[in-house]
Length: 303
Image: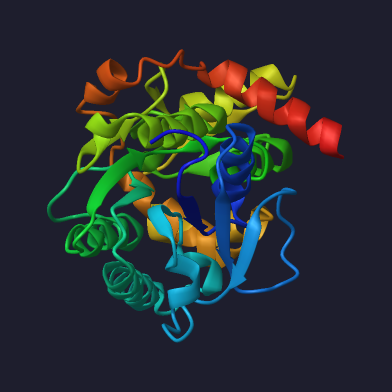
């Protein structure tokens, strides 16, 4: 799809990923429409705004009119912990109904990276369920699966920073030894926009991650070193991810409705098993250390 063609719809446009994606699409010269719940939402200049709520299907037709491709970035955790799986399910189902009626051709969905099957956290299981619902539509769905996204304002980044800054000595459960493949937010945006350009990604499921595979312990230790702080981590066997989610929710500024499901998912290893995306979109990837530096510099500039 070339810039200047049909309207591209972005749902979840006011979020951590959505705002960056909208700006990147506009910079490419694309016509961008944002579905938002509040008419006064702050969005980059040049974006068309349509008010609506995927949990309330009435009025969604206007959002999809003239749209050929849509990005699905909606996540119900921000609305509170209780029932987020049900809200995720309902929002995805309403999206599919409206999209099919409008004749949408393609959806690009950013979800969670993790093993399939049993034993998944509620958060990761819900992300997979949303993907399955979207794939049930008449349109093709590109499913990008990402683990921890490192960028200013992102929940995972803010949790790591708060823990390192506020707890020079941490007593943690075994999840600190779980492997993860973090990815810089700029690289996520590069993949999201690249999928729009590369038709060969239509209908595919792709793992996306940065060049480093690290444990959560290593991510916190590296963050401490980059910011000149001390970080001592002691692992104990009796702290489960669920128990530790309570003190993480207390220590960090991230809302418990978001931080607690994320922490409970840390027992699941989240590393790329499939690297086909690198053949289709050979982007230069950002190291974890550089992603942290960029995030800190962005926060300092905006602050």
